[in-house]
Amino acid sequence: MRILIVLAHPDPSSFNHAIARRAQATALTNGHDVTLRDLYAEGFDPILPGPEIPRSAPLPAKIARHCEEAASADGIIVVHPNWWGMPPAVLTGWVDRVLRPGTAYEFVGEDGGEGVPVGLLRARTALVFNTSNTEANRENTIFGDPLERIWKDCVFGLCGVAETRRRMFRIVITSCAEERHQWLGEVEAMVNANFPAHQ
Image (tube, rainbow, N blue to C red):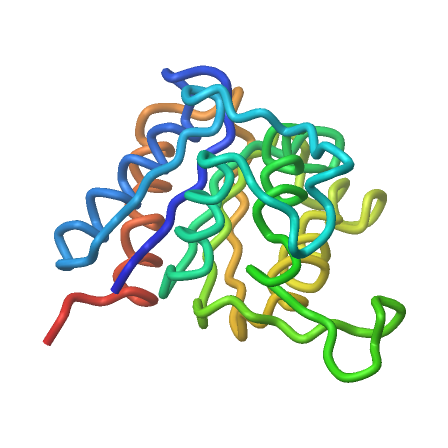
């Protein structure tokens, strides 16, 4: 299987990076072809230029490569912190520029863009790993866990991914080494369960 990992955190020493590395190592151990995209490290430009919006628009080589990786992935893993109930801007920009018409979805028949698009992504499963410093009850009762809706419904569901499984790790800022070790074990278990070794 081809597994695409998209990481969005500016600090290489962050727990998000540890999550991405564990997911990558687990998928590689299972025999998969893994691409890890560290958006901050590669300086991904999140700004979508107007001329790039149409489906037929010519794309910069770097964006075209990201699109090909997303379209050909059998599984996708996204890793990012919860910032204001949203992904970091660089990751939102990745969604804007990469999960584009013709790559991730399309409108069919006489639908000129006013209806519900048909998903095109090959991946059947996406895993989303988040970190937060907000207590779970407050997150769910006051804010309504917006990241669940963003990834499951607004992004992956719309793009044709049948299963989106998400795990939020909290509270990271007060966590100890033992807790983080346990959390990384959960990351490994989720990757093993959803992208198992070739038989």
